[in-house]
Image (cartoon, rainbow, N blue to C red; front, side, top):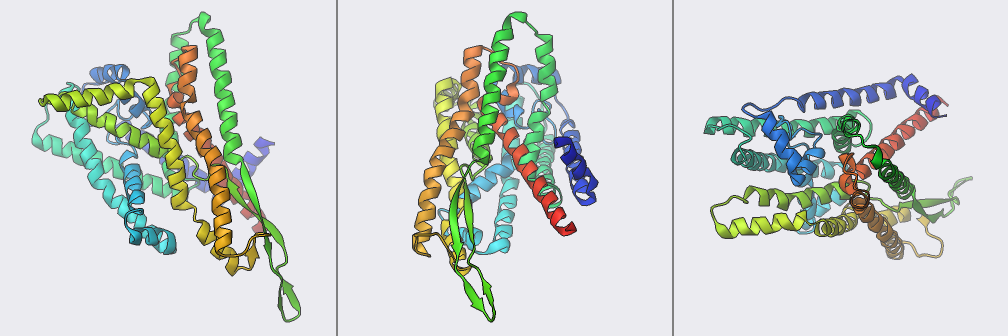
Length: 426
């Protein structure tokens, strides 16, 4: 039973300490999320975010920190954007690709260090753009150059602080630190959404609410099904004789997940789709009529539900392929199999195995990418049909996918830790 497994988790001292460490870091994150920068008008800010759909969505995925103009108002956006940029550059610079794919742990460490360095200017630029926009909207009282500089440094430091917390979770806790912090920011809004439903309760909406939660349950079940789905490629190992002993001769399988990219395509797509909207909002009141008109057209384009949904679907689909191409290398797998004396029955080792794995991977990935993009826009369709606008934490399906994927990934890692402890005890 689940409660017995939960008891086993907390009986193991090392595993318990890791989970408690993650909870402590999340508490620090929520504390920082409630520390505002000086000189703000909270009443005007709440009205602004309630009326602006784009900034309301952006605020959702940083756990409400932006509506408070807290020191961590940017969330992990700059860090994620920096990683996207660095990974895109691997397609342009072969040395960078070699560093990431062929130099092992040391190469990945240097690669991540470049991402951290790039986070600093991106966070500073985004902080300046946001503060300037909010000042034009009258949400922030007049800032002197010294106060503006201090605020930019504070917000940039907050973004780097969150990046550090995420890496601490990955290193000393359980799960992917970046995903867990994004998950925590989304879930933090749940109590307020429940209170809002209770405050605006209307018995006539009961059928729509029931239909809404029924479809949401189907979506969650489908996400779990696809995330856990995999295609097993049979692998055999040749027999080797050393002295009087025979090694190998066993058969196993190489599992390929239907969605090997996990939740990262969703996060990447969201970062990209929000960027032009942020720029257009910044230049909407420009003195140059052409720039102001272009910004208005971009803003109107993303306000259109069909345009937003199609763009979002395409980005999720493409990023699923891109992220898988960066992180999953069929050539390395085929080389490792060949070195260990393994082969796929009926397929020649080496290049033929690489081609076979590549073909299987991208056939399956088409299903995973299509499903991921479809689920991402499904809740928008459901909201349009039922008219239920509460529970905004599943707007666009993005938050729902992140929540389910992070929970599954974290639970998978906890199970792996428990199994490892059982083997050590045995």
